[in-house]
Length: 347
Image 1 (cartoon, helix red, strand yellow):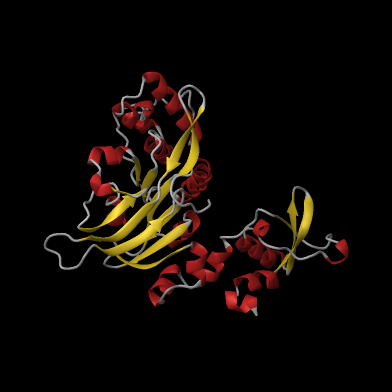
Image 2 (cartoon, helix red, strand yellow; image 1 turned 90 degrees about the horizontal axis):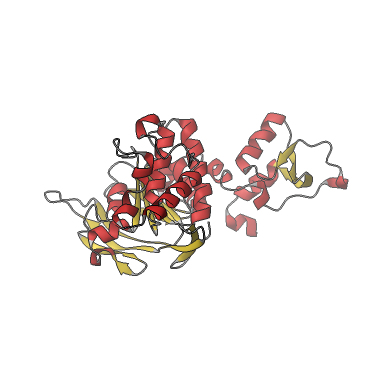
């Protein structure tokens, strides 16, 4: 998921079966503050950051950090007290509220599907309000159900009560994408799911995002989820003050202060290993070309899982295999060197 500057074009299937352009929007917070009447402290305090178009930005922090408040000011479910939020250079405060919200997809923890409406009607809510034709809505519903891993033939006529929690969350995601919004807001979307379903939907959303390339603001209290999902992470301390905003790897490698270091955890070096795969690193040469004595591992394996495998196998080296061929070796020392501070690697 590459960084962008301004609109990012993606592709969506139109009702005529042809591919049509869609876009993602850059989001900029400029000194955004939210104060509630009767409270001396701000809920969000002078928040400034830029989210490149097409990236996932995760807002994470302790309770009282203003994560959800900051996100809801984007679609003005909560109004800004001071400062501004720009969507592709246009102030969200300058847009009529209904128009703004129709341009932004919204996914919440408990889904919020209408229980008396079919799955198809739930997904079609915003397109119907926008005056789409029945044929276009029908095509879009089928496309989205297939995209989120549901059955486009049998599921449209089912009702939310007939679906599992994971399936309902998929429908909520499809509904948020129905009108092809430039921005998606996701408020702890997987928090209410069991660990296995949560892991699966996280992986599927990352796969989906690689295809649709929308700008996503994702709220979670779980730093591991933030590291896994985010292109960038904004860590907020109590009072809605930005503690650090950077890529997951940069935050784990160089926490801005003691608060950030404690929040990301003492095992941050291991967390960094989960961000890279063996295919991302330069491998060691196989001595004399003989790889028969080494345990093998797929190139798609994360460095963290590779290290765990070396410990399990009692081996200090693994042969890395890609498309049936050994591409090189990875060793315990190799992994340790990759974790060293950048200045040490340069020496």
